[in-house]
Length: 536
Image (cartoon, rainbow, N blue to C red):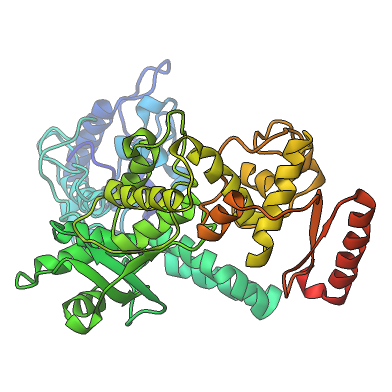
């Protein structure tokens, strides 16, 4: 091949005369000799040597790598050097393989291939002087093709006849392309390095803190993920309900919503492989964080079926009742929330904006066929029944529910409920702010405590702030029971304007007519707190 790179001429030792030929036709000094001219000169030189006397050195024919630099004289015989190669004056003069190697488009030839090419050339020096179809040394081109093929793989290196162009050649003496090596996953290696560094620098404490985060990094790098199913038989008890008409997918979502299984999809896939499983509507006592297989086995066990109920203690807030309906009745949060927001669907007084206060605290058995609205309607109907039993006229029901919800949160002992109701009524009678911490806390979104801060008590933007706004709060702050309702309808007699609980263990409360008396009671309470730091 005329245009393939002769690696032997670049890196293999040889006679200097093989690179610097003498009797070449002179070329014009104003331009470099082209490769075609060089090949023609080399062919003429070969013909001359064939007809020359036997004593003429043949080293030049043995090297046969290319034309000498024009205008140079033959040098004494010595090992060839890369410095003896012709000097290119422009990028276009570079051999295509050299240019590709310099630009990174071509890798250097495999060392073994080069050695084999060199050995073949030494064993058959006469063949190296032969010419190819275009007058080039065929053997040299063949060695170059073998070396280039070893380096080029499937890049089209090689060809026949007229050589190779930039666009690639036809099939040649290249070996088959290597199979690409699979990419190594570096996640475990990275994790190992990081964890070892942590242990060396920060000790066991640093490892315990950062190891989980490193494992998350490993999962992201390595493409792995956390298990999508729990293992074992579960932890704490939980009751779930399968409603009438629920299909397998509904049951799976209920289990995930209640914290029984980690993934509803995993449980549902298990169901698909168990076509003989059928569920009966009702409530089942399971455990949280069960494997899907353990949860399915528990649901199939009739001993786990129970008569579940939604239990609402006195003073429970609406948001807690909603949560109980989701966890116990098997209802979705979206369904429960939508039903709670449809306030006018339950026959409540005009202008009522919330179900808060209208859900009577009691025990409601789970009915697998009920919707969220049916549960709420049952609770509202029960509240109306108890209001009527307490003698509350329908026109007064709303005010009594609001008032009773306040007493329910502020009073401690049942015997004190009527007194607490009287204190608030006395304040209303003299246009005095009720100053209830329970209402302020509710307005901030906290339904589980009655203590507040100075800033919260000064916040006029809170419509439930009875330190700033006079009168009853705009809506109930809890769901009152019978004791609170009766306390409002049958208040104790007294002139009290103040009260404070002085013993949180016993619930003892002191009622005062004047502020000075109240301050004494407050000091009594502060002394009790100092003696019981666990309450602070």
